[in-house]
Amino acid sequence: MRRGFSNLTPQAEEGEIDITPMLDVVFIMLIFFIVTASFVKESGIEVNRPDASTAQSKPRANILIAINDLGEIWIDKRKVEESQVRANIERMHAENPQGTVVIQADEEAKTRQLVAVMDAARAAGVTDVSLATEAK
Image (tube, rainbow, N blue to C red):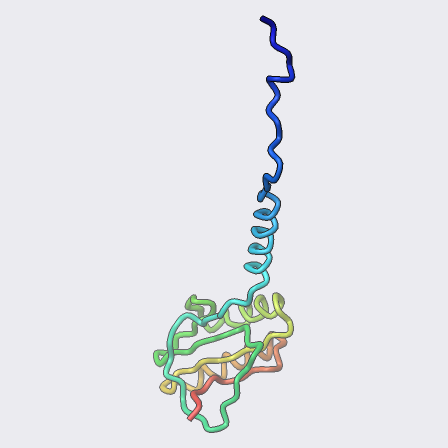
């Protein structure tokens, strides 16, 4: 009438695979790759860049500034005033000191805004300032 405790404990099956540690490793690797991936940065608007036969690509351009044909300045998908350009460049340059500034000016943009943005970039301590163009 009385049963022993040996019948109540389940027996471990041989050959059972526990995949929980493998899933943990996969999720940790996924998080690592997401954090370290370099994302495409955009200035926030599309501009008609002028053509140039000597155009070269900039691999480390992390500060993109766009100037449209209306003279509006866009940084990080936000429209900024001319007086705020230097502070934005200083902040972004502090995040990545090896990066460069690339100005994407519309071919109809005024030279005054272009020179103001270049001046603000140099005043912020960035010496590598480039103008984006279309390759012919």
